[in-house]
Length: 92
Image 1: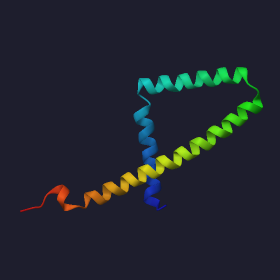
Image 2 (image 1 turned 135 degrees about the vertical axis):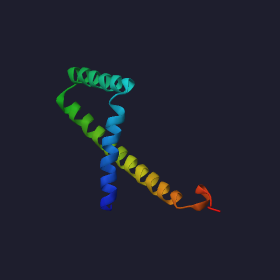
Image 3 (image 1 turned 120 degrees about the vertical axis):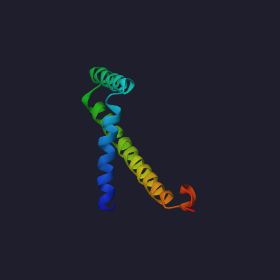
Image 4 (image 1 turned 60 degrees about the vertical axis):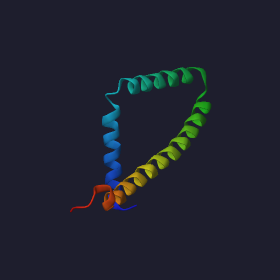
């Protein structure tokens, strides 16, 4: 990946965190998730928790790759569409 894309992905991550942090339903979902994990930890062994975490890490890794690819595709499409004269009209 080119260095500009790395910078744009970093900006995307920061902007996404900034956008999500004030959302009440996001905060509630995060709190619910943490409470569910604490309850899970109370009722399952360390071995099972480790296996679950490994599975979740794999799923999250796949999801991160998919989101990064979608972001880059959207950025590429936006740049290409920005060059098309018919979307901006022609000057007389």
